[in-house]
Amino acid sequence: MKVLFVCLGNICRSPLAEGLFREMLRREGLEGRVEVDSAGTSDYHVGEPPHPGVRRLARQYGFSLDGKRARQLTAQDLARYDLIVAMDRSNLDEILTLSPEARGKAHLLMDFAKAPEKDVHDPYYTGDFEWTYRQVEAGCRGLLQHVKGRLGVVPPPASPS
Image (cartoon, rainbow, N blue to C red):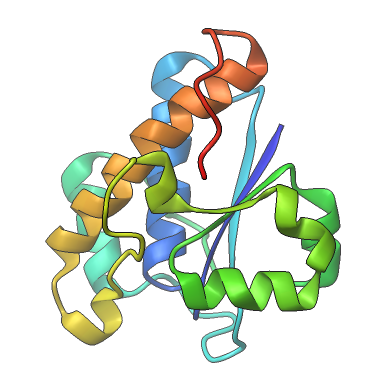
């Protein structure tokens, strides 16, 4: 299974989700069964490492973002990945504009959290990295259950809306 997280610049929310989800998979003994990556819909930060605030969170919560560099989403990504997880509605719209065929496999991260709030707040603009971390963690916990269901590790939960 292949999971791709997507945000605007690929320096805050999507690398945070990538690193945290990778760590969750490792703790569950599933890292070899799920490929995880992230990308941005824009080319604003291509080649840059994650934002210092995100790197601080990774260290604080015990996972690595070593070697991660921002990259831009491609049409090939949308064909290659089984689940494409957008951080907000704007990025989901960009994904579906680039590839209408992605409709069945593109979701909002917060749909997996079953949260009323659907957009993960962008700490690049809000400065509140902890708030973003809490949202990403909740979404990744729900996504982990979804992925475990698809892998046959646990009974599959209902698909997000």
